[in-house]
Amino acid sequence: MSLFTLPTIDTAPEASRPTMQALRENFGFLPNVLATMGANPVLLNGFAGAFSAYHGGGFDECERQVLLLTNAVTLRCPWTIAAHSTFALEDGMTVQEVDDLRAGRLPANPRYAALSRLARLILEKHGVISDREIAAFTAAGFVKEQVFEVILSVGLSTMTAATTNLARTPIEDHFRAQVPSAA
Image 1 (cartoon, helix red, strand yellow):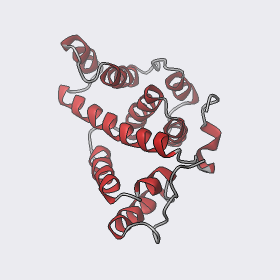
Image 2 (tube, one colour):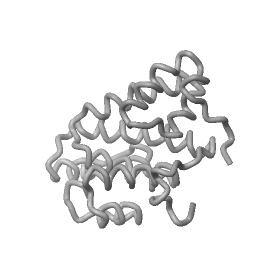
Image 3 (spheres, one colour):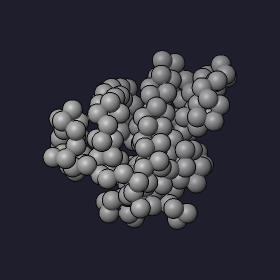
Image 4 (spheres, rainbow, N blue to C red):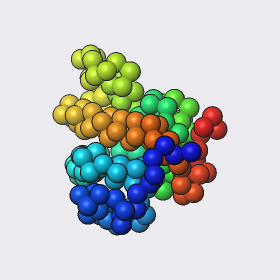
């Protein structure tokens, strides 16, 4: 059961409404986590700004989903695991790639493996990454500065996971088929 009432665009604070509307147009629906964030315009608008920057970066949609799903699994967040598994499949990742990430395994695709490995290390090692770990990332075809986009993915995932876990945000039907079995 949700700890907070999910505001709608009409019931959210005035400062959240334009952002909620824009996010609904972007997704085609308003995900429950964004409705939850809408109760606090500071969180919602901060998230939306970071989200926009992240999606304007140098990774393609599947690479972004590799990062976000890896983060969701590492953060042990059922809502984000279900959502990013769904989005990854919709964006063209294979079932095997999604299953590997959900199980904490590195995918066979070397670029996806490098992204997943680095994201997990950043979370587990609190950002203390060695030169060797960055070299493994760049050896997969990335430029060193893209490490900062991986950090942004970790920040977005942390905001989302903390919000959904704390608020006990309900998982919408659109993501239900991808809810982790332990959730």
